Length: 174
Image 1 (cartoon, helix red, strand yellow):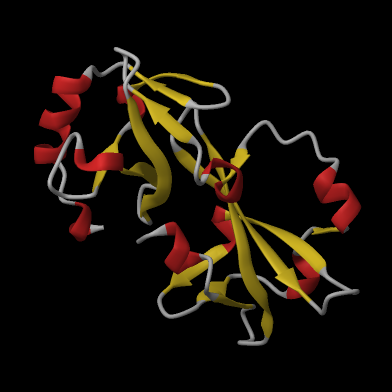
Image 2: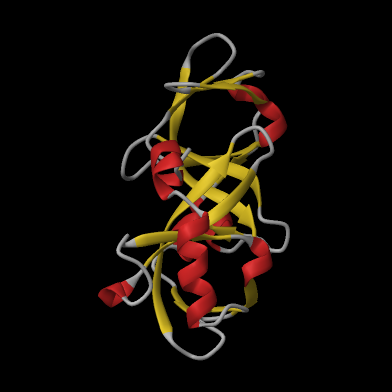
């Protein structure tokens, strides 16, 4: 499932009462795992946030069904969320960060995550700029392909290896 599809979903508690909508996805870039889901509820001036642990999810179909009630979920204020010392990234923070090859060629920005809902792992989908690497405009990278993450992502792969990667992954299968 794509991260942008997950972000549009409604979250229901175990009584089928709507809690809110997925606002963002908290990811661990060291393990390439989905850590939590951020849910927002309320209006513009009264927005509340909930952090859902993946263990609290019963099922993901057209919506996200929880194993628990709304009262059982940790609620964060907007201020707490902005000042939290999360060591993980949120998908919104990762999206549009540029990716560079090992030989310093700009590859393109991060556009999407391809999430395995069973293993809770993901691959990063990158938009190839200027068609340098593939006739497809997008390709996927895995945790082992990354050398470093700072203001941009540096790959272990050189330009020619990236061309090979575009043949290995079918982005449409995500």
